[in-house]
Image (cartoon, rainbow, N blue to C red; front, side):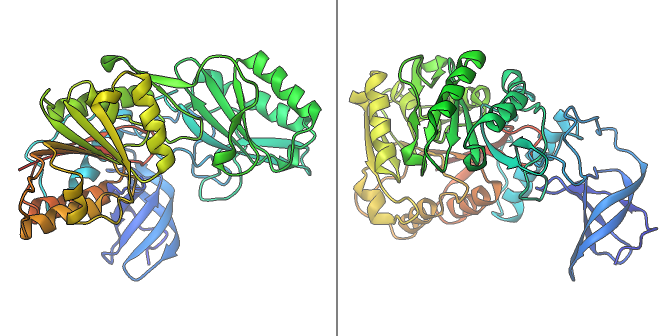
Length: 448
């Protein structure tokens, strides 16, 4: 076990933004709050045969990349907000570390080295978060209401008065929201407020476990008028979400490069960072290099975030998603944007798909793959199976652009594509979708 007076030299950061060191016994020590190059003493919390987890107690050499956190609620102490993990690290260093995490995962898990590393996609580092789920808790003993993210490694709600990753107007709304909830009749039955910001609308979804009183509805309307927000109500599951008062501007985001408007509901999955999403969609299409005579399949198409832009370039685009509801919403978005003639959609469980299923969707020149954190193993395995046992009439997509929110599952799938399915990984790069967090998004390109 690491002695209290032992000085450890931090060698790197792991995926959870913990410093990684080795003690005098050679055991790995993960250190909360420590940065590469620093020399620290620690207090060990958990210990296993191969590793220990610790918190920093003393430091005698500080990293040049250490910066003062912008948010007063960031920290390692009890009660600190758990929304961010990297505010103490310079923004450029955060991006470099995420790029290294991607490279390490590809090398160690997938045994794949991209032929070219793409320049990371970066954007604003503060005020970028346009989607958030804020927990609400009424604390009778203190006579107060808490609205915000959970405390670090805790189920309790952090006592937040501001949040620098939220847009300023939303951060300034946190205290008024606490006052609003505290004044409501149902304050102890309102567990959550979900935030969704479009180009012209700031929507707040109030989860309420019991019907709202007439007085509470009036309070919500007064708040909406004062702060310029749109209230949506959620009495039960996500399917029950509805606009409290009809009228007003539409909740939507735009993709200006393609002349597209994408309406969405505040509980739909959309990227939290619209600026980065706009750049990501443009880069993905340039990397895919779609031609006017080509057919493309967009796997895990969602609301059409990539499908509709692809339809402005390709002869035909097939979008496939696991939900009939999402597929219908994608169709509606295609009609609205005038690309319905070049798009079609299908609902399919993409985690249970085999070679025959791929063949049933026809030959495509190129693929766009944008899976959830679980990745696209079934798709990669089906391509690998077709490569090992070719079928008459099948032709592989010449190029695949894979957009990932989990470098580990991307690396796993890349290993199959490269070592079994006959592809080369020609490029890969990080996408800093969530600055100040340990979340790593990335994009990779595969060719046959």
